[in-house]
Length: 518
Image (cartoon, rainbow, N blue to C red; front, side):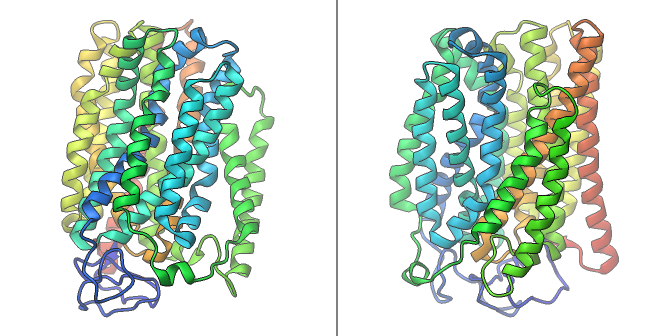
């Protein structure tokens, strides 16, 4: 996650130490060499003059994918009542199918971008996502909507790693921290504001068909993003286009199967009854071991889908682990909170969405600030951020336990604001530091791995929190005032584990004299 001040430069690394960085994986410079250019393989070039416009386009594309993760939550009741064939099983697959297919393509999608051109894969991803969104909106029944959501998830998995890889390619030094800060703001705002946007659309277009506009809203954004991407995103250079790459099909299949086997029992935990589903976790572990063995063998002579040497860097391995734990605690918050407000207190979709606005505001502001100051504070900034998230979530638990029936939405404003500020100081700095030592040529696959960690964490967190939440509801005859605090207590545990990971990195860095900073 971070460059270490006293650590020697490795031959294939591109450490991000202030303004001194190598541009390409094959380029090696001393720590005091002049800054490498952004977005070019030629050391004499200047930074891409369109890099900030390109960033806006990346955030537009990545934003609609992230928005779709949470915007659908408030539309589920509308889908259930307004769509023929929207059985409980189909509704569950509308959520879980998206998560599965999204996770499936993250690393292969990043690898494709690294090998064939990130602009090309970005445009293909946005185009496929836009078409799938139209299919979702026009779906005549539940089966068609589930299939369209699977395609939408595949498109999101292809698109998302291109965003982090392009930021890695186009920006250096403090600018990279600022760019990742803006991306972190997009993550926090899109996740938190999704229920509000969904609520507004359902209120405007009615309960029966309002859910369709939850998907139609992606169409104009997608079309504009594609047009601007052709104009401002950097194309692969002639040298890069002429270079032959190995695509490691066996590695891609093994990794994809392992991710699906790991995610499936968690995303289907409330629908798939019995314990047989958990054997898939064992299958995932076996597939994961086979993947590692294959990558070691394949990497001796060819390009593997993942360079396992990345995990030897403390910054990267710890950053992926922290992202997994943090998203396991962060994501379930809006899942159970929206459910309790709508089903328990009978809030409208709009009012349920409004309850998360303070989180979005805090996250957006703090992410932007965090990206600008991460080069000064490194991992310590993430420790502060996770502490604030713990305090905010703890306050949410206290508020629900004591004021569940008395204007709960108003009572949640301040706790969610604190949690949002903490989230902003966690997500974007963690992204910046995790990729700080990753060679630019591997930015897509490395960014995909971070996203896989986040998606796996989200699935595990929702399953764990949901299990406690629904169990308490069943035993207390639907008492959300009991189920919500206990469920969110599990979220607190995951965020606490992420905090511990950050503290360990800071302590180890101080002991070794290699404190993590950008």
